[in-house]
Image (cartoon, rainbow, N blue to C red):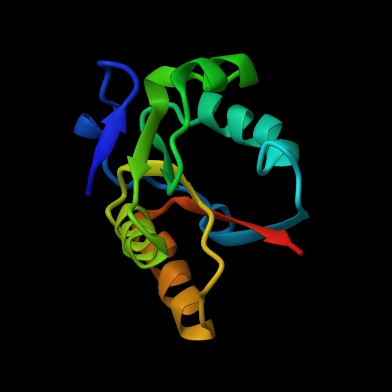
Length: 141
């Protein structure tokens, strides 16, 4: 997994899963119409989540490069942000599961279109195990 922390701080080093309410865990799907840049309507929410991640990562698994400058302009707290670049959706799916399951992230975000009901159930279970929130961004045609 190719992770690129955007700051030298490492919130994940000392922190593992922590006690949170069960309702804070699980995978949430956010479906939006096409926008430019992609997922522009979700960016304020994602920036807020990056600022509230505290001692764990805000992990964003992406197929396309995201610049540090763009994230700063959107209000992200970079010392909690970890970008992970996947080569394809299958790779992103595995990385999403791993990041949800390992308990080092407060929030894990990705955009994957091809998921089965079994995939979603496995991702939700990984989120419960890792005590983190998963956000699955999708666009509607």
